[in-house]
Image: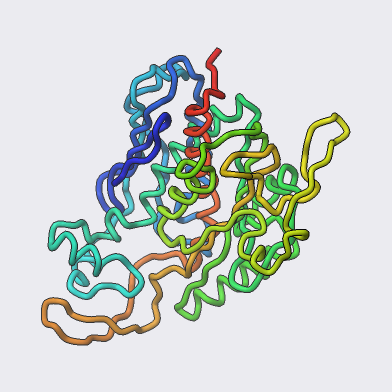
Length: 361
């Protein structure tokens, strides 16, 4: 299913080596002011070919809005927006069609769809499909910003290197200006050096992206299956290479006592009810409690590596050696940072609209 969302719904279009990748966005009220250049800014943050530690594939990724926005305002009809794939070379994928790449969806797609799936560059299972998430999220962020809600993300860790806790509103801006999108200046070069070393070895590495959602009013979300955790986990786990999501203290909560994990309530200087800690990650009973919603996303090492591996020739039923060629990210984490925040923005806007928090002027 390539569609997600109720009041704010998105449908992904295209494939990695097809003519385009994009999205159909439904649920934007007519008259909503939208800046197309802000969409391009978000796309620029995830585009390939940005630096020496990303894939060499070069795509300008400039958005084309076919329908739904005229003169900077939404018309109320579905928004069709996409970018064209230009730097595409599918010849290599034709040569390995019968030898599924370890770690990729080649094998499962081949079994499920027989010879009818798009095998080029991973087809619809490719990270290239996240372009649609970023476009939809860039629209959602603009609508959320009118309510004082901001969604930020940054690189929390790469392999064993972990960034310190940050003041998101200030240090996020700094993190977005370096190659690895880490807010800790002492880790920029170590991160780059590690990824470079792994790339030179013909290998890859993974890491963690942290996302913080600020300014949510109390009560956003719905009990049980439409809780904030449920909805965010659904869309985040749909991002290729994601292997884990945790909220607040996350898995560390299993080692804590109730007296340590409970976030005690208090009043701030303005008389607002807040919590002294945020182990719950800003969520109680599936609803926002007014504190920052914080979650972390685990990305596995990029599956495409140049080291020799084992696979099977499906056609001849023989074991064979396999060595990946082509252009690939040695670490997907820096480019995944904007994908996580924009995917999260889509879900939060959907819950905001469902809960009646959004009113167009």
